Image 1 (cartoon, one colour):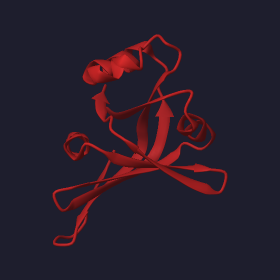
Image 2: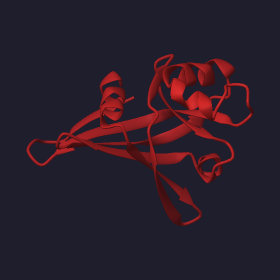
Image 3: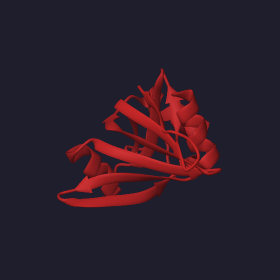
Image 4: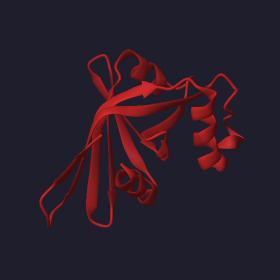
Length: 130
């Protein structure tokens, strides 16, 4: 899982896919953080992505860096503890301009039943489950 998180951070931007009804939705994200042995991402409750994940927690992210791409598929589970939100914001202090762990908007999710696959055009895919 640490390798997955490092790859996402090194890539800088990854794309999160969710579903809204029968319509896929994809948008750029940039947070990846390990807290209590789980891979977390962050968003705001006011955003459509939050509502999509609450309705259907299945999601996938994809990132590309140095000729390799990573796909992580699984369920995103909300962790509503202030400690989890604070840990994320402490790891990304620039987010504190928009978010606070006690603002009622900051939301963090962790991956459950996740499968991460590293792929490239020059080597066989490698899969990690967590």
